[in-house]
View 1 (cartoon, rainbow, N blue to C red):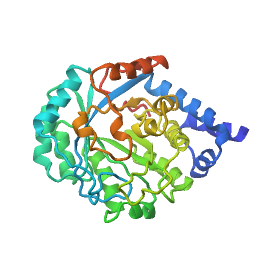
View 2 (cartoon, rainbow, N blue to C red):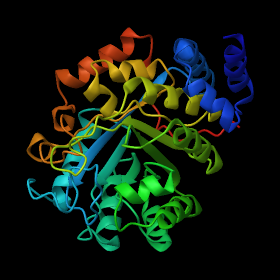
View 3 (cartoon, one colour):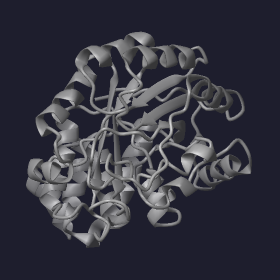
View 4 (tube, helix red, strand yellow):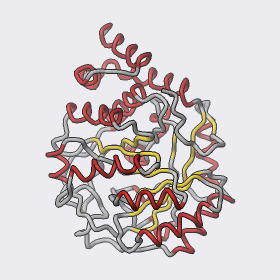
Amino acid sequence: MEDLKDLIKKARTDHILEREEILLLLSSPEIDEILFAAADEVRKRYVGDGIHLRGLIEFSNFCRNNCCYCGLRRDNKNITRYRMDEDTIFATAEYAVQAMGLKTIVLQSGEDLYFDCEKLCGIIQLIKSLDVALTLSIGEKSFSEYRAYKEAGADRFLLRIETTDKDLYLQHDPQMSFENRIECIHNIGRSGLEVGTGILVGLPNQTLESYADDILFFKTIKADMVGIGPFIPHPNTPLRGAIGGSLQISLKIMALTRLLLPDINIPATTAMETIEKNGQIRALKAGANVIMPNITLPLYRQHYELYPGKSDTGYLPDNNLQKLIGTIHSIGRFVAEGYGFHQKLL
């Protein structure tokens, strides 16, 4: 036990761990609360008590890919597909800024080729006129496209690796290229956009070794934001019968990520809240500093079902958002006023 505490102290002060040390901490449940407390202390020291709220707009659920874990997969015929038009996207963003006071908008979709670079750059320019930070989460693009988004005003781009285990990636992401995924993540950074990535936790055949490699990957690429969420099986996917991920393991991976990358942004993901009530609060107490409230209109939100239960989450400019803010205050935190850019302190 003392050796484990020494490892946590090393991570807390030096922000470095070897692969075998990460594995040891991941496989030792007796130190979980000590690990979470250390991550919370590092979070407070480096990014403070402010929680950044980032409004998520899911503007299209069309996707060209066929990932085995995702409800938006191309071969899912039991889904009503939709695309929001430019005016609706802008009106949603405008309401989020003016009525909800949000400082960041996140545009997320499946990999929908209808929204080409020209269309997206036009939407980016419109939303940036609202004086907000803008994150895109729209999949694999070319370097020139990432660069064009940056020049149009986009600030960040989220592209999850899902798993750094190549065999596992190819198993669950058929007809996709692991090497291209990695190259896209590097190209995001080269384009000048902040780099967001992340993983699913609990995919079939995923191991503690792969989680350790994931954490080290985040550090290697110098990620600006990392999202970590438990895998939740969807009934209209090949993984419908899988067990799914654990909140506890997800929190441990998140806490270790905070210790090794102390100044980055880490969201308390919606999936954590979906599998356990107050899952996001537990995440905020274990290193997270961002919440991404879903502000997609219910008309569309019900059809953006990456996993069961996701469409039930979200916030409109009413008591729901005020309740979230009240919960944030109840744990001694507050809603941050800035745009939430990664302030690199290391």
